[in-house]
Amino acid sequence: MLFGTKMIEPFNDEYFMRKAFAEAVTAFDKGEIPVGAVVVSNGKIIARAHNLTETLNDVTAHAEMQAITAAANFLGGKYLNDCTLYVTLEPCVMCAGALGWSQIGKIVFGATDEKRGFNRFAPRSLHPKTEITGGVLEVECAELMQEFFKQKR
Image 1 (cartoon, rainbow, N blue to C red):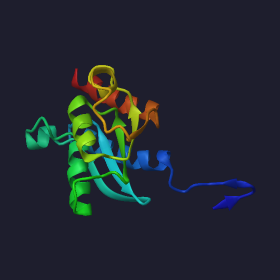
Image 2 (image 1 turned 45 degrees about the vertical axis):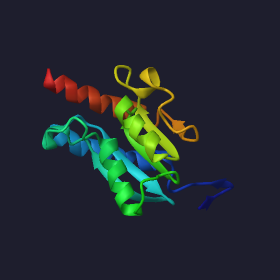
Image 3 (image 1 turned 90 degrees about the vertical axis):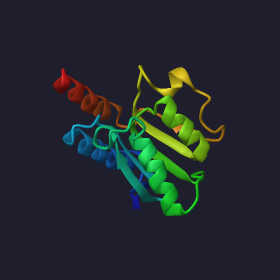
Image 4 (image 1 turned 180 degrees about the vertical axis):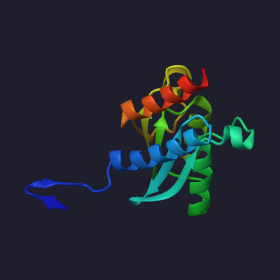
């Protein structure tokens, strides 16, 4: 779309992060740690997920893991090299490993995770061609997480 001389993209990183954030709010409302994710391919969301560790009684049921599985099922293959993952929190080492194996093309995350994030513990766990962008809607994503743990304590 053109408005004046500036090109406005209707679907940008913030737009898709807001969709991931909506998934995080769903997790929050269910008593799950509020992390949400969406996988985008060719400008369309092909997978949506949020943490299900409490619901499924499964420590591996992170939003990213659920989104990887859903996206692979949608595409009919295990590689996500033409996809972008939007996730509200920096992936942990486990999720980064799975994302590396999926050869995801790009990861966009909201808040950093100083305690468990892959950048601190396993920065080389992703595929070498994976692009990474952090800090998209960082404040909103961090505040939701902080509110969740504030209510738990």
